[in-house]
Image 1 (cartoon, helix red, strand yellow):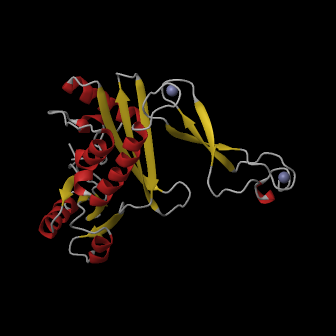
Image 2 (image 1 turned 45 degrees about the horizontal axis):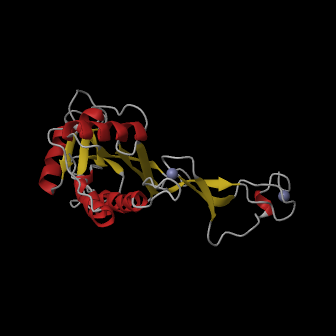
Image 3 (image 1 turned 60 degrees about the horizontal axis):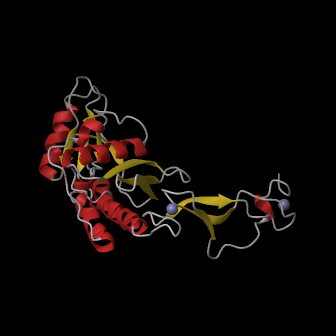
Length: 270
Ligand SMILES: [Zn+2]
Ligand SMILES: [Zn+2]
């Protein structure tokens, strides 16, 4: 519904000689919306899987792709907005499922509260409006109105602010970036990068059974402390795993020292 195939098609054509088809007549909004009228059920993986399976059902294809995004404060750096993107590939031919995620602060996700006629040009500039659209809602709803979505012109924005302010008990409105991919080029670029990663991974076969999608699924921890040699929580290797068979290999991370700083050791620095 949101044109994400534009971000995915090239990577799949180049790396896998595969074409991406968009099933007609699917309402993915029924599976949850960003603006919250319909809450998403379950985790991001479950929501993406539901989309992929629905697409496979409609097209009759044996492979499907589902995408999910979520926005909020960065997990390690509060106050910095962050975009978590997930792409999930369901393959009923090989009976496998491959999932790739990308967490990035490369997002314009932001909101602002304002009144009619107030100068919000700094906010609009910072979120790169009108190339990126916005959603307007009453700040303190005094009656039920739907969020006004996909606003991408100054005229429409003024009108929406006026309309929503009448439905707000404090006469103020909340303006939030519209994070749907077709209205947010920054998000589209992140999905494109993730699609490249997923396609590369699908193009990598398992050295043991030949199934597609061999790749990094985890980071192994336990780098020995430089003083006492006890394992720490520091990363030691990338974990590669096959989605089909039991093969798992650990590959040491480039540029990571052999031992951990004693500061990260519970034994030496409790
Ligand atoms: Zn130690
Ligand atoms: Zn395998």
